Amino acid sequence: MGDVGLLLSGAVLFLNSMMLMGKADGKSVAILNLLVGALQVIVPFYLIVVSDQQHWTIYTNASIFLFGLTYLYLGITILWNLENNGLGWFSIWVSIIALVYSVIAYIHFKDPVNALTWLLWAFLWFLFYLANTRKMNIQVFIGKVGFVQSWVTLTIPALASLTGAALEPVYQTVWFYVLLASIVSFVVFFLQGKGKRFRSTDTIHN
Image (tube, helix red, strand yellow):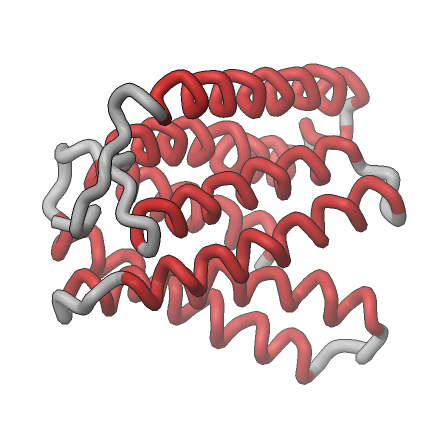
């Protein structure tokens, strides 16, 4: 599921970014969220059941649930026109879990690229908390962050892994700096816009 799951997540995040920037219809995008979300809940559950039951195996497969449940929650919220406060609280919980995965990737697995990737995802989930629970008017900013992350944390890494390019040392070096530059730019733009453009709003969904 690993690389294929990343590729599918890249597609979902790309479409979600288009929705948040007002370029795609919310209900149309919600369909893919539900389809991929269902896969990323059913498949990891199966992989855990048939696995060797070692804790690191379960730990790795369990991370897929974070994406699957987010996509399902978002898709249902849009299609049923639900109040999105719950989605926001769920997102801050996932953001904290993502930070744990980031720390473990760096300390235990000695994988700085994966650590930065999880840090970027944690930031994106945190933005969903701010938009859905704190009601900050940052949907366009989230859309831009999601668009970049759909490529640099999901689509391109998935393709690199599927083709074997991710095993090359030069890829690891280049991608480390790509991710680091993404984090710095996102934080700078967020801090610059926090007091100027971001205002309270009722909802971020179409």
